Length: 414
Image 1 (cartoon, helix red, strand yellow):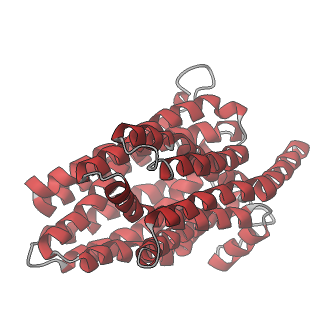
Image 2: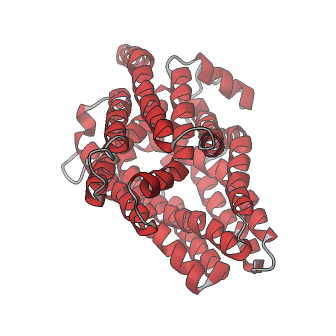
């Protein structure tokens, strides 16, 4: 991953894409923390604070397939430049926010969600055009490592920005990251704008329905959608459950919640480097399946350790250990979908996956709150750990055979 003749870092486009995405994601994490933090500080209302997050997810879930349609119809390089510049303009409502005037936050959330519904499918469809199939896992690992760095830097910066500068500082800082993203996209080679050749899956129809039909007709993609739905629902409810687990079962403080949670980011960065190093030796469908199976096992250890110890350092180690299967399953999922999906409908497939993730995250957050009223956090978390293993089983039984068939077809065609 970090050297050699076949290193992805020798690909200028990949370096630009990873660098631009990392800076861009710092801004995304900054805003994701800053907006609800500011709203809660100003209103003291948990409902209003949650509404900001749910509005953003709702817009992304609704517009994802339509954004994917645009990504399949427009030059991807130009699309990424335009969406990054538009996101700078979409931040302008935040300049009007005060503690007495909160509503512009919701306007900004709607605008950002709408533009991201085009940006994300375009970025998803772009990577397979820039690298060979053999380098896809390594490239996605690099993006995953950048994402982990962004999470650490952006989340910390969001808190400081709200405390010392307010929403104006947040808007300016995020605008700067979008400007970097636009510049990185503008510097991509012309290959980023070259459309794939038409295929039977394409037939010249750019409609959302045609993309959905192509996705459903592609072996392996329906089980991938199931995995995406299950895993995103788990992740959507985890943040609340994690806080309850640490405070109630470990007797931890707010600081302990942050320390333990941060340990996964370090584990994820290390995991991204390891996955990138072994990428050429591991098929993405096996990375997906094995990642989820291991994720379920490590999560079970973490959840069921309190009867034996409540030492914070133990949970830092265990939670940090989840960074590897979390990264492996995520990189494997991204790479597998990009491998299976027909090139001509890649944007619409990416938009559909974004919709599934956004809907699942929202449902997970709602279900976690409801289930905590009738059962315990450990029961819910153990159920989630079992479902992570189920995702791995679905991968082994349904995705691996489909990917093997797809690989054989490609080999015979060449």
